[in-house]
Image: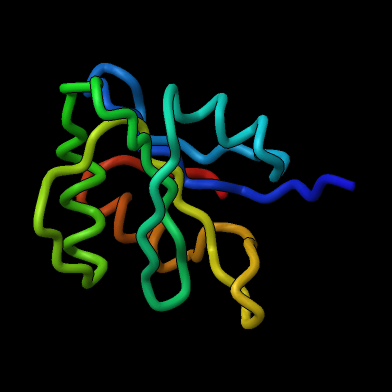
Amino acid sequence: MMTSHNALVVPTRLSQPVHIRSIDLDETAFQKIASGGIGLLTGTDWHVYLDSHANMPTTNPRAEVLIREAGIDLDGTIQGTALFLGRDRLDGECDAPRHLIRLAEQLFDLPLAA
């Protein structure tokens, strides 16, 4: 059984908008978001799934800024689409946290419907 959650999606291309998308959480859904392998970074109450495909040279500066502003120190750069989801008490997935969505709205000067 699949569960749908609202994810905050930060595309690599600056011409594509940061947006909220309802996704079904299974491996196929994650592979549709990331063109290659999937990496993971974890914040206090959120996860970000990242495209970890080694041959993709395109960085994602918006995702990088959002991750840093949310309190995670990064050693490298972020590549590919970033998919932010909330983390529940059992380390499972849930909707992207409202505070992270508000931070993205402030950083990128755009309203996001959640």
